[in-house]
Length: 280
Image 1 (tube, rainbow, N blue to C red):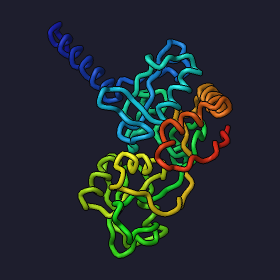
Image 2 (image 1 turned 135 degrees about the vertical axis):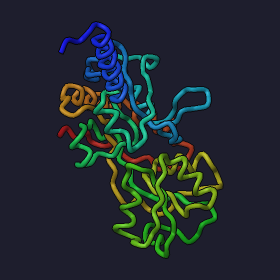
Image 3 (image 1 turned 180 degrees about the horizontal axis):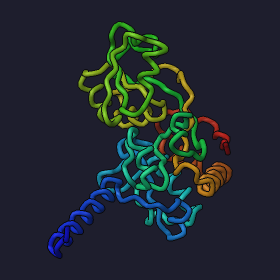
């Protein structure tokens, strides 16, 4: 059957629309590696926007926190100036997808290295070792550690993360789990009394406690070990080696300790020894 010119034009328009939609669905990410983008003088780095002391988008549009300082240092070693970094919000549940789709070059967002995540992405680091703990209201005297969460207490963590389930599986099997998209929403639920405690890594909780002096406190000793790594595209050995070199340089020249003291020195948080990079 002969197709006339108008019909052919219509089919072409539909095909073009589908192609554009497909690109949009994938987030319009780049196929270049982080090192290749860095050679062009620009990087997109995923961070958290709502974690005081680690990754925070301030009211004036600037960014602050230890993860931000690590991201800037690493970018600098790759040849990218701070004003050429685009910071992109990277909630816990979206980090692998953002990397896989090329929407970010690197993720520096309290990103614990584990085998399940390594099936989808690669990691440089660790650049910090944290431990899971609990955040409660300052006047709470009944919750002192994970074992004290029995009796149907409500525990909050974020979607795409594992700390709350870890507590349920190992310490308090009748705890009621609540999940929100961000830790800041968990903290608001704690303030309002909707949950009894928030759980994640101690350094994250210390940042929230420092933001609300006299209102919230971190309780109990850390009961896990969380190795924070910098996430990047799976199989990109060149970028992983370059980022590992940068992390080691940051530790060696004192910038690592200086960044931690700048962000947590006044909070009472005990800064741990620097980690050893694992070049797996």
